[in-house]
Length: 91
Image (cartoon, rainbow, N blue to C red; front, top):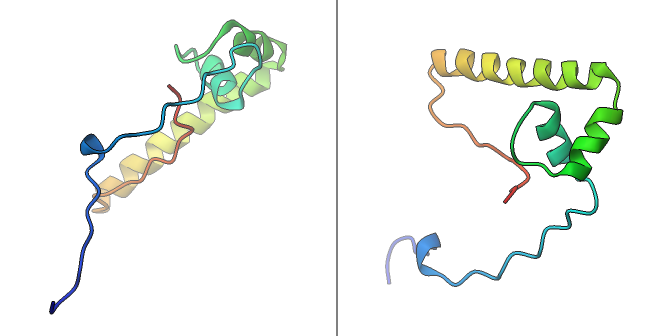
């Protein structure tokens, strides 16, 4: 065959391994961060850790999120049209 060869993976068409169970007995840093922001993707154990942190942790989480929003809006205004959101894959 001539020319480049491409292999495309269609995510909706392949069997995926089952997700491991979520251990809700141990806090997870991403869920604690979510709890600090007042989100819904956390568990009581994460909320307990968030409550133990100094108030500056909650303030810092909100400041970080606000910065991300400002930076993304500025970049979009400069013509950037694609962004990659690398997250924790919370389920």
